[in-house]
Image (cartoon, rainbow, N blue to C red; front, top):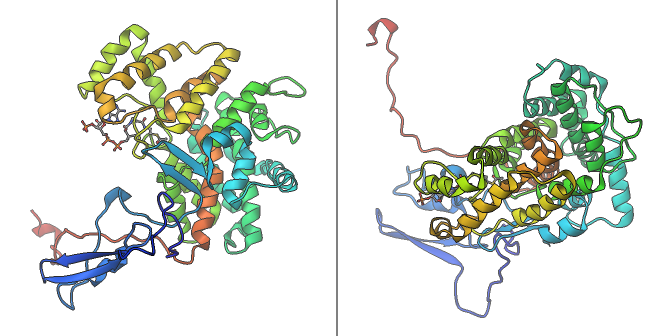
Length: 446
Ligand code: ACO
């Protein structure tokens, strides 16, 4: 492990002090003491293996269901400090990127580690834009879905199907091939997403318009009807671009862990990112914004908020869009999203659910129950309101999350592939099942 790499907050070791960066562990079964090196506030699980009762013992393992306290990789992509509410991509605060960058610039940053120069950005945008078209056979493939198929199901299947259209993608250790698949994945996500949406409406597909921006073209493919040339509303285009920036990566979350795990078998990036998209589909991951919106609709009016909060405190239900495994402070993305919400409402008219959301937040931020548990609004509390005002049905919410997350997934996948310490992901288990027993013929079983 490279000891110069910060794993949590950047830290320096004071070489003048006499302290040793080791952990001493005494095994009370044997009375033996072991000294285990500490690097970046971490011990290596494999170092525990030398703790053994005798020669035949396999050695000590660590047990950590759901990876609550296990680092599975070294990463240089995204940094989160959940206590302080900090999120940075490649060192740049999310607030600055949301204010000053575009989504494609951010995607370049995530993938390349540095912000692009003007010519690099131009070239990058050109490549992404020229990979937005999908093969005509993919259209036929999409046509095969039932009219009420969930757009996330269509998205997952179509991303996986791209693997059959681009068999060159299996050359994962060829940098040129990886570059090409990256253009394809980021370029085609909005097209597949928009075609899936149009399919559910029974409307003809709208082909990409290469003169429009990444979010502008997405709006074109979604909403164009009889206009000869679709002109996206600049406020909605900008709002969508910022939402894309905020959702681009979030370090080792469930879907990032999935693309790393599946990709570690060296399958092509289309299959690996289809798996990541499937992980995102789950209600505990990318589906929470829909739940938050449903909750606001269920509350129904500002007057009913105190009664609902009472039910939450009694443990009968949860305040959806509140709380986070990592953030024990205001989710920095939620703060930015709240601002965008007002810009979208100014244009589209205020979402009547906003007052209910604001009242929930006001009460919760003052209430002891939420304060004590450090429950703050997360990214999903306001996004549903914005998406709904922009005209998206709820089934499209996780799709809107998946489109920008593709850049983060590809960055995580590539970092995993190029990390010489990584191997096929294969956790251990603690086996507590039966010991060996003999097969019982069916007629003798009770
Ligand atoms: N409403 C009410 N109480 C809550 C909430 C909530 N939204 N979230 C947590 N709590 C309470 C729990 O009941 C628990 O209380 P207790 O100590 O008295 O038992 C305490 O706060 C800790 O909660 P955990 O469930 O242990 O926290 P965990 O970190 O495991 O869960 C999670 C995080 C799943 C996000 C949770 O806060 C939650 O269910 N929130 C609502 C769903 C949601 O908004 N999910 C989106 C997350 S953001 C994203 O994935 C993109």
